[in-house]
Length: 421
Image 1 (cartoon, rainbow, N blue to C red):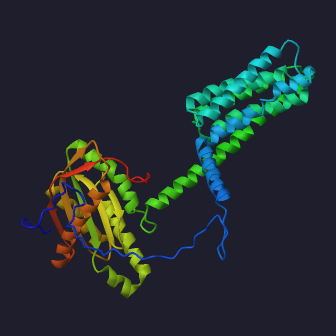
Image 2 (cartoon, helix red, strand yellow; image 1 turned 30 degrees about the vertical axis):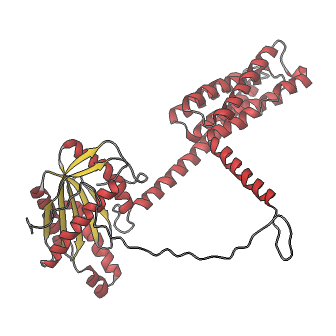
Image 3 (cartoon, helix red, strand yellow; image 1 turned 180 degrees about the vertical axis):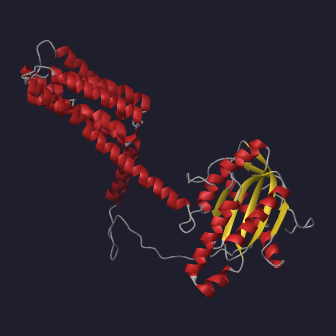
């Protein structure tokens, strides 16, 4: 291990600070001939009416605003409730379709349906609690509508609507809510099967049909949702990991760094950062080929993983450059960690590594924009200096120095990625 007490110590009070270079860039402007569209036709001029174009733009903006006002669940609530709005009109045209003495119930159901429809149209995205209330009362309203209708065919169609609420909840609600809605819908469907029973066989058929009508749509929606979530999770992993080594790439590393830095700041430990560079890797590729080079990188990663501390974050930042972020108690402890990794690589792989290590006290600021990217960039810049020193001194060695305190603002700067080591 090489240490240089007189080497420059990075000041990380302002992460990412580097000497600024500025240059005056002459402003260049030029007159660019333009084709001017006019309302009045002149000799040789093209005419483009402005009215329809402007109206189409406004219509497109209104459409995007309207679509953004609703999510899939609220849109489904609007569609399902709108079908019940004409029910009083149909009952007025054919009074015999309503059971005697049930007109007040029909009025109450219609008023509630109107309230749900108009509230959803105004609010847009329903909260989980509001959707639960609307959904539960809505299923009882559907069951009541099926009961007060005397026409068997119409009642059967209405009963199928019991599946709408559980299926809608399966789009984005929790499993507990979906299960509750499904059980209530099945119980209501089974209860309606015993209304005006014609025979035991008829009741059994109604019961089976009621259960199937509820469960099949819920299962389909839940399966599609699960498939979509799995696909999105896979894309997130692919976007945050290096396909060759399975380590976090730069994006994934930054995503997970915030959590680790916050833990270190809370514990009072120092933060340790290693930049691990494979020695003479270009020669390996040139002499033995890229397939062998890839195999060497995989072996190197296996060695790094085995020697790295448990609470560490490992990533691949370049072709043959790997980084490691971990808690440490100081320069001596981090140097020992880096030396252990260097020895592991030399014993388990056909190459050696040069390691630049930086350790620094850590403090956290509670306000301001997250600056995790700037912190990691600054640590990388310092560690890269010590890698250069290690390679200049003969390679296959560790250079470790401490640095000034790092002040960071916790927070995510990218989408969630896979967990670190």
